[in-house]
Amino acid sequence: MTTSKDRNKTGKSKARSGPAKPTATKPKSKVPILAIAFTGIAAVLVIAVVFSGGTSLGSEYGDPTVTGESLPFFTDTANDEAVGLPAPEVEGADFDGNSVTISNDGRAKAIGFFAHWCPHCQVEVPRVTEWLAAGGGVEGVDMYSVATSMNSARENFPSSEWLERENWTVPVIADDQEGTAHLSYGGGGFPYWVFVDAEGNVVARTAGQLEIPTLEGLMQLAAGSGA
Image (cartoon, rainbow, N blue to C red; front, top):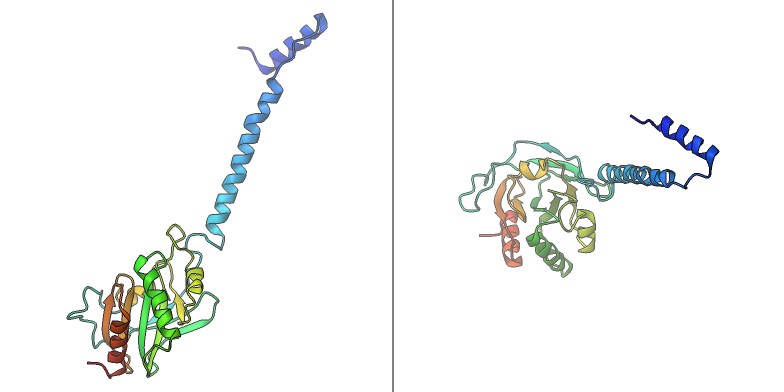
C-alpha cells in the first residue's frame, strides 16, 4: 500500500529528474476542512439560540407558586363540579419581573388563561382590550390573566410581544413549562376563564371564545349581582 510518505518521496525523486507536474492536492484538502469548520460554527450558533433567552423554546416561562387545592379538570360549564369550591391562590410575576398575585383578598375576580398560538385568544384579547379601554368592566370585579402554554415553535411567539402589541393592560402571570397555574384552575381549553366571588369561591368556568355581553354577565355573577 502506498503511504503519504511514499508519495512525498516519489514527488521528490521526480523533482531531481525533471520538473514535476503541478497538483491540486493541497488546495482540495482545504475544502472539507472549511466545511467542517463552518458546520461546527453553525452547530454552536444553533445551541446558543436554543438555550439562550430571547425567542428560545420556553424562554418566557415564569415560576408561579400555587397555594391551595387544585380545581377539578374542566369539562363543561353546565353542572361544573368546581362551582362553590375555593379557588387556589397563585403568586408569580409578569414578563418584566413585576410581582403579580391572585389571592383571596375579598375581591371578586375574572381570571383569563391565554395561549399566544390560540386563534380564539388572538381574537378575544384585542376585543377585551377595546372593551376595557372604552370604560368596560364590572364594578367590584378585578381582572387577571395568565399567559400559558408558551412555545417558540408555535405561531405568534413570544407572548410578551403579542400582549404588548394588543395594549393588554390586565395584570398577567407568566406560567411555567408544566402549566402549573393553568392546571391548578382546571386546565380548560383556550381562552379559558374562571370567575371567583368575593369569598374566593368559583362561581363559573368557561372555555372558548366569549362575546363581551357574556363575559360581562359572568363578571356580574361573580360580583353577586348577576342571575
